[in-house]
Length: 304
Ligand SMILES: Nc1ncnc2c1ncn2[C@@H]1O[C@H](COP(=O)(O)OP(=O)(O)O)[C@@H](O)[C@H]1O
Ligand SMILES: [Mg+2]
Image (cartoon, rainbow, N blue to C red; front, top):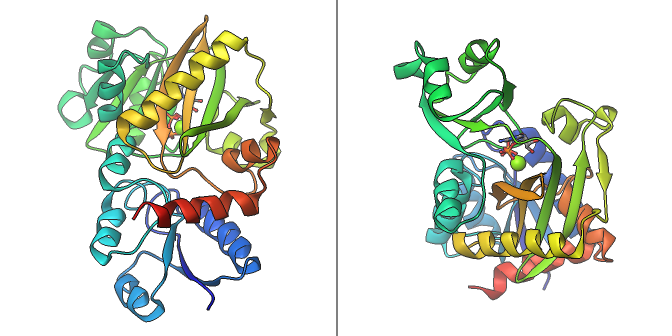
């Protein structure tokens, strides 16, 4: 009998479109590989769909809030169905950039200095509050988004205006801006899958630079790093993955400046679109998209 795989994608986060794309790529792949596949939204009918379809494994292709942050994982745990990627607590920790940073700092992993900013309380003294701890330029970002949504590099002149666009969030992270190179490392289980460098033509690796081919971001593999630095970034990534308790495939985002690696975040559900980095890194070492998806499925079923 063919195994039944339910691919969960879409959702209500700001990364909905990326998730639909990831879901489509994964579902198309699985259909080639002797599975019965159902694609499904995490909406009110989810439990009904699970009951009717009785999946052997759920491929969680959601990104962002309510998909990558432990909420949906809790529902799947209760249903006792194996699902891909990290579990409840690691997902919620990794999605929260402030909690992650606290863990990084506690374990001596370098991450940009930051303050947590409450827009409603502090909007009058923005510059004073920032200059107490950080220097301009700074980077402002939501605590729990992805895909560079609402991430801005700010100077004194535009910070007030940019922060206003983030006023929908209760709390905001303001980080010191780290120049230099943009490097990401993928992990697959206990192994390091590989490393990629991104050279955006835009001001930084923003949403357009990530997903729009016309933005012409350069993807560089192998990354030109000394053996020692490669070992260093690999060790940090392994350590972060383990500290947070992640499972399966993750991707960690770094800035490399003046010989130091700054860990920005760890992604527990990296994209699987045609432009996504984990499939590209895997492909470089001879792991095809088919093999990558098969591995993720198997990993989900083995653990439970
Ligand atoms: N402190 C920083 N200094 C320099 N660039 C940053 C900093 N924080 C974020 N960026 C830029 O913004 C991008 C997205 O930030 P990141 O923290 O990874 O959030 P997201 O979850 O949206 O990917 C990074 O890949 C990088 O290009
Ligand atoms: Mg990132």
